[in-house]
Picture 1 (tube, rainbow, N blue to C red):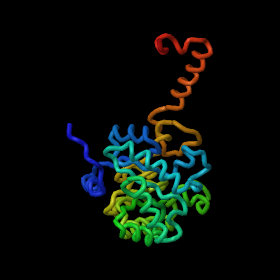
Picture 2 (cartoon, rainbow, N blue to C red; picture 1 turned 45 degrees about the vertical axis):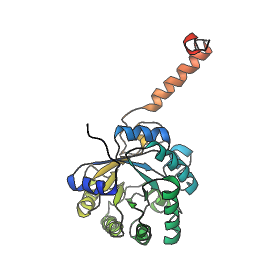
Picture 3 (cartoon, rainbow, N blue to C red; picture 1 turned 90 degrees about the vertical axis):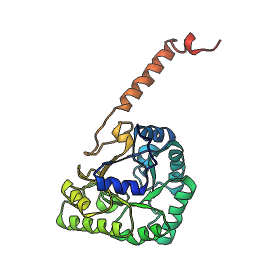
Picture 4 (cartoon, rainbow, N blue to C red; picture 1 turned 90 degrees about the horizontal axis):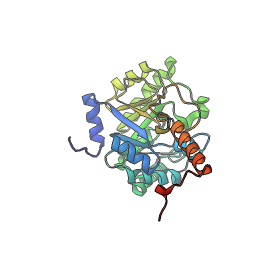
Amino acid sequence: MAQRKQVTVPMLLEMKQSGSKIIMLTAYDYPTARLVDEAGIDIILVGDSVGPVVLGYPNTLPVTMEEMIHHTKAVVRGREYAQVVFDMPFMSYQEGPKKAVRNAGRAIKETGCDTVKLEGGRSVEDIIAAITRMDIQVMGHIGLTPQSIHRMGGYRVQGKEEAQKAKLLDDARAVQDAGAYALVIEGVPTEVATEITEKLSIPTIGIGAGPNCDGQVLVYHDMVNSGWGRKAKFVKQFANLNRSATKAVKGFIKEVKEGVFPDEEHSYK
């Protein structure tokens, strides 16, 4: 079996050109990073989704740079091959290029991650350009952008109307032209994501954007049902860890109460 190589930006561009699907999952800690890396994932996204998924926040907006740095450090320690992407949290880049470059630099320098991701299209092209001029690689994110839920009125599919579709196409071009190396497309109709993917030279990674993007991403906890809350229509659960873990905890409680555990096998002499 061929030795795996560290996933790089040029490798991802080659995957788009060859038609090889790019696979990305979230991870927020060392054991999950180890698991998905050893399974063969191409990209690990340390998403600001850590807020609602792990930290108990109502959405992604309260997440701080310090929290993202803390979790990304753990993920970097757990990966060997996958590219690690640092998700820039709300207000770490929106105030302008100077602050955005400083925070992107912190992300790379303090965590050891490979690239950063930020949300937005035409409105953040100057920020993407400024960061990439510093040789920090940027992954874009358009469509349903969770940091904009108040403007969007919640987690709503984007691009159903012609005006929205035109804006998404313009946003995608702006992100690419500003220097991004890849683009996440979230919560848009398949037809729109397909058209964007065909028109861009950089890879697209879909989440709730149909099957024709160059890659796919899901939140790990959604994929294995290890968490709480309503799951989006685009989430497929490949396992049910909540059920297995709950069964294990109940078994532990029962055996301790009945005096079955610990037994001689699990005790020292």
